[in-house]
Structure formats: C-alpha cells, structure tokens
Image (cartoon, rainbow, N blue to C red):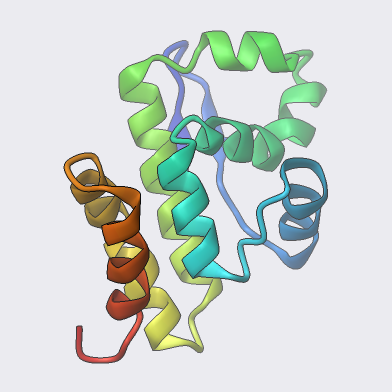
Length: 135
C-alpha cells in the first residue's frame, strides 16, 4: 500500500478498493476501471488527482478532524507530486492480474507529460496504442 505525505508532514494511505473506486466514480465521474478514458480525463484535468486522493483519504482525514479545504491547503506542488505517484502506484497495484492495464497505468505519467506538448487529437491516438501489449 503506497503512502504519501502532505506539506504538513501528515502521512496518508493510498489504497484502491472496489468501494473506493465506486465512490470515485459516483462523486467525480471517473471510472478507474477504464484506464484509457481515465487517463484521458486526468490529462484534461490534472488537479483531478487531488480530488481522487481526497476521496481515498477522506475517512482518515475526518477522523483527524481535517476537512477537504484543510486537506487541499496541505497539497503544495511537491506534496501533490507525492500523492500523484502514490495514486498511480495504487492504481497499478489494483490491476495485478492484468499486465496490459498495469503497463498502461505505469506509462500514464509519461503520457501526461507528452500530452503537454501535443494536441488532444494526437493524444487520443497515442493512449490506445500504448495499451497494446509490447508498446
């Protein structure tokens, strides 16, 4: 289970379960079981990762008396990078029985960086190609 720390030094767990994926799908309208469309949505909305890690940490945060605004206040650039890395690791771990899904998720951060320099139309062709075994 990957953990990450926020700018205040608090440690947060980052574990994906069927229940957490359902909550994310219902509240954020992102289906993490469909990695291709999820990666495209994360490219379009880079701060969506902050919302996802909030959903994953919300129960623990509430027990500590931390609300969403306080949680986001402790998400500076380096903390968001740590949270993003932990999220991608947890997402990849969720698909242990699906090597092609794992590979696509493993490559997602690189694909997102490349997306900054290319048009969305090109990206739409790149992501499905990356999901093919051997790419």
